[in-house]
Amino acid sequence: MMKSPKGKNMLVPVYDILNCGPKKRFVANGKLVHNSDKINLQNLPSRGDNANKLKKAILAPEGYVVIDSDSSQIEARIVAWLAGQSDLVQAFENKEDVYKIMASSIYNKPVADITASERFVGKTTILGAGYGMGAGKFQAQLKTFGVGIELDECQRIISKYRQTYGKIPELWEQAQKCLVSINTNHYADLGIKGVLEFSAEHKGFKLPNGLWQRYESLYKTINEKGYDQYQYKTRKGIVYLYGGKLVENICQALARCVIAEQMVKIGNKYKVVLTVHDAVACVVPESEAVQAREYIEECMRWRPKWAQTLPLNCESGVGKSYGEC
Image 1 (cartoon, rainbow, N blue to C red):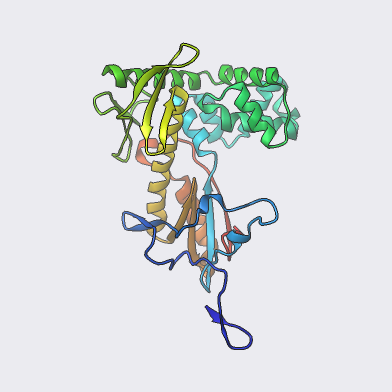
Image 2 (tube, helix red, strand yellow; image 1 turned 90 degrees about the vertical axis):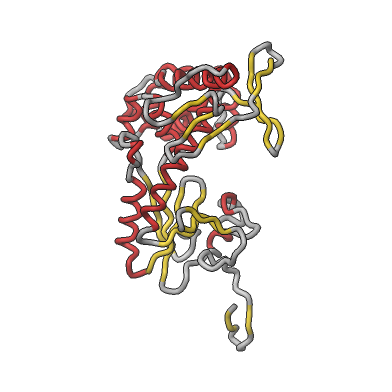
């Protein structure tokens, strides 16, 4: 509430991310990690006539700014690291353009000669094909970005990804064996050692933070093509599970483990007010914006003890509002 030019009280379209009231406040280790009241902050419009209007209405208090830091390509990095795909991991570690490298393999031409449109296909491949995406879905994903490619060419690109980074399809196969093991109570492994603990008895995986990712009601069925498939019941209905999808579940869980530990480090010095997917938003004094940004980026590149070889990076922005970041 503020005074209008005529001295009357008026409402201001601002969502106060520090003082939103008691509803839907989520805290971990004493730190506020998310708060909202009947608003989905993960899907605020970024395109069209209303692009960024709501985001720009989320303002820092007077004398403060918002710093939003996004963990770059974290799922693509984790799937390569967990699979032991050392060449891709090293490319991430060296800050090479992995999208151009992928495009170079797809189009059989030097990295230096890759065009912007070819790089975009490489980017879509790296970010989308790590969980077993097929040619049809890949084609549909490209189409949403206005890129039209024939189905046969999409199949060739998907096959090229799997040939270039063969350890990643092997990870899907390991995950499929884990699904079998949950049903047959046999031992199985998933990914590089020392990260996950698989237990058929517990029907899932113990994560580095000590929590379990379980599939307690998992059961096997036969699909219309005669292949084995697995499914389990959730509050939202039946969910189908296969090796690539399980890898996606695990990589997203590991990404959250990483970011949660990074948030605790950030929270030791600055107030964390919001997380959206792989991004962390903080409110810091305006006078400390430069050093705060450096500190937050340092934290977002910090590696937990269980992931010392995981290549991490981030991007950040500063603004008076969430939308300006």
